[in-house]
Each structure stands twice: as structure tokens, then as C-alpha cells.
Image (cartoon, rainbow, N blue to C red; front, side):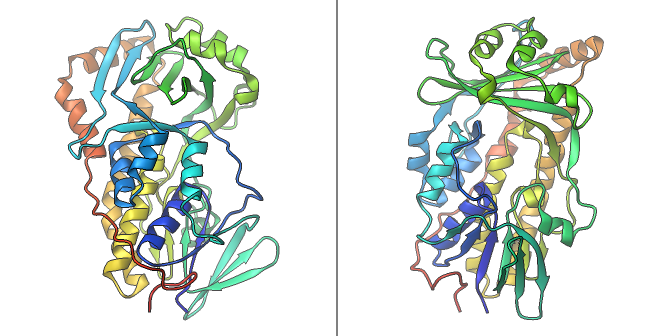
Length: 392
């Protein structure tokens, strides 16, 4: 039995199904939600993700739906520049911002009919000698040759394979939203770091702006969870524009809130016939803007490994070797940035901002290049070898 089952219909799962289909391998994606709704806010797709979409033959479609970003500027609460980093890479790809719903729609449009099965929440798996059985919450089961677990940072599959691998709280909570702002011309992503928290604003297409705000606090804090837009306006009231202008347009109806978590790096992603990918494998804080990007990279790298190995389990191990060092570095670096960015002590923040300003721009650019500069070979289009199966 060489069938392949993908658990999770998010960015990681959908992109993996597309990548496998491109090399002639059909799959079935099981998603817990009963319907796919256009939810979420914005996200950034770095030049590395754009390179991955190029490998999938989807770069032009992605670029048509996204908004190119020239740079990322970090400012203090008064609007003075702390650092500025160019977003382009040596691969010739820029960074783009896109609404999550539009990215989701693009991915869904490239799935083969019947690939996605909704309302199917995987609760556990049972591994046999020659196959895996997926047990769903509705009481049904699916025997399958191999499982790719793309079920997010709260993955039940990962928890069963790596006991104790619970998401770890990063120390701050986050609000997100999208506003219409045709009178606020922005051409780059901007983050404002202050003692009361961070605010980020990112231009999207159609005169929209994606914004996010973070505040340090205890996990699952009921007081912070009850914040409305009015509370955020008061909390960040002394921050310079465009913060006030963006928050003045926000509404409670469009407010998305959640604590920020990541994963302590795992010892393995490959477990015989089961592979963890995306946030299920290496969930990261958003400080490098790499959560979705690394999931998209995963999909392309996995497809290349499957092409190179006749045994899927060998492909899974090769994927782990190829991805472990990079994803660990991304997770650890992003967490460190979040700690420093969330400092509240005025003396420490002043020292931090001064050191950042004294740092040669080349230092920031080198770190950004390490994130963005990847080379992913194009995946050749190969006719499918049948529904839900690896080629024989």
C-alpha cells in the first residue's frame, strides 16, 4: 500500500498536495473544519517563498495577487528609524504581502478535484507493519501507506509521536486586522517598537493595510483577551502615525486575537511512515515572517526528495536532513528577536535602539539574506500515477 494522506488543509497541507501532484503523485488532504472560509488577516511571503512558488510554477499567479514590499523599517514610538532592511534577495525575488484568504484561494484553485475532504478531524494514528491507520473523530478510519501531518502547531499527531512537545508561549499576545486605507500610501512594511508593545503595518493590494499589535503578558490572560479596538487605541495612543490612523479604522468585528507560541526544536520530523511538516514540525514565532514561508519551502523540498528516492520513508528521512538545520535556526532566531523587541524597560529599550542604529546596515542585511536566499529547483510536471498514491 503506497497511498499518501495529508492531515491538515492549511498552507502546509495544500501546498504539499500541489507539489506532489506536480511530480505525478496524487494525495488526499483531510481537514478538520467543515468548510473553508476566507478568514485571517495578512501575511508576508519572503523572497524564499516566492522562489518556492516559482518552483511550483505559480509565481506569476502569486505575484498578481500580492503587494510587493520594498523593505522593512523598524521605528521607535516617536517615529525615529531604528533599522531598515531591504526585502529583495539575490535570487531576484522580492517580498510580497498577501491576504491569507487570497493565498488560500490560490492554493485551492490548484488542487485536483476530490483532493480535499472537509469535516475530518484526525484524532490519532496507529502504525502497522506495512501501513498506517488514521482514526477520525467521526469514528471512521483510513488505512494509508504514508501520512504527512500538516495539522498545525497544536498537532495531535506530533504530540503522540513526541510526548511533551507542547507549544511554548513566547511571552506576548497579538491582535491582527485588515483595514481599508486608500489615503495612507505605504510602500514597505513598518514595525514600531516601544515600551508598551509593538505595532506593525503592512500594505496589501486594493488600498488595504494589514496590521498587528503585540503586548507582553501572561498566557491566556483574560484581561488582555477582552481588549477591544478602543482599548488598543488607548494603549498605543502615544505612538506616532501611521499607528493612530490605522487603529482609527479598525473594528471589533475584524479583530483577531491569540497568544503567540512556537515549538522547542524537535529531534526528528520523520517517523517511519509518518512525516511532520509546517507548523506541526517547526512552529515559529512571526518575528522573521517565516511561518508560512517555511511551510511552503517544506512542500517543495519534500517533493524533490520524493522524486529522488523510490522508498517514501527514505524520502522522509532525506527531507528531515535537508530541513532540520534551517528550520531550527529560523525558530531560534525568531524567538530571540521577539524577546528583544518586547523589552519594556525604558533604559534597556533605549540601549537596544542605540545599538541597532550603530550597527552597520550590512549586518542586518546578512541575516535577512540568510533567511531569504534559497535556491529551489523547479519541479517538473509529471502525469499523475493514480489517486492518493506514490508511484510504484
